[in-house]
Image (cartoon, rainbow, N blue to C red; front, side, top):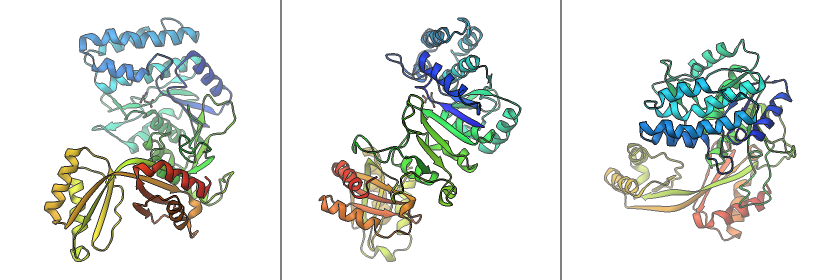
Length: 438
Ligand code: ASP
């Protein structure tokens, strides 16, 4: 049995929803469906964005603004052949709560209405997510949700479930961060013990490289959870980053598919790492490097002090300054008397506070902040125990006259992180692609 999630673009127009119906009905295994709220359609904004504006409006104006949400759903219902007063009772209920409704309740109404509409269209049960997904003090409670969700869905043959939100057990709605319907899909897939979690979106899958910079980049057919983590970190954001953990724990693969694709690609399958390494899944194209991805806008702070290596607690004290200012750290390459800390760009006030705090804490000889670092990750299981990948990368960059600002390889050996200047980013990506032909 399959759990299947459709994103906002798939649910945005009468024709796309009709196509979604066809996709679900073409495979009887597709029994549990999770949906986002309708996305942009021509000039029409995303329903969730409209609902954010409803929330931001003065309480007495909220009802008036909500009417554009109703108009969009009414037009969809009419075009799909559902009765024109299909949402009569739901609108009345939502409108009565609008003046005092909290953010999470209001912005999640798009998913609620969308799931109800699709359930009626395809004749599946509608199961609300408020009692299925549990938050405790605003934090998602995975263990509780797993049990509750399993129980609630175990006797259902087929159901549509709204994405993006759950509840706190006291009747209040609590939402995930934006894009969170991906997480709901993964939770449902695990609860029903799906053979696969199909995630239908508006792109074909994960690419070997950013196609805006490397036009011949291609779709990766099989990606492991570990490789996915590295790529998501570098900004390949096809999926909400947290959506992986419920299915990963249960060893359920995720299949990314494009709702609007004519069938020319199967998309990307994300599979449990151990099962890939033991040969259960294979790639069409066997290369040492699976993908190359990168991001600009990192900062690097270079700190040096004579005899730093013998000063016990030096690194800890530097890192504690980051901790106090709540700045997450990305990499810490170090020398004998120097260390560099690479982190995502912060505002000037925070950067100055950080430098001052490090100066007070460890009294370095020099401290220099560079604001123009780009990081590039070369990712792939194929490079494990294969000597020479880093050497090839370095010599290719040096032949292209690109200065290497940093290089770091994790112990897992499935990635090499290279730092270059922001200005060299595109050239470095092209050069590395030329070298590894991903
Ligand atoms: N509709 C919500 C958003 O726009 C949640 C989602 O689509 O996953 O972020």
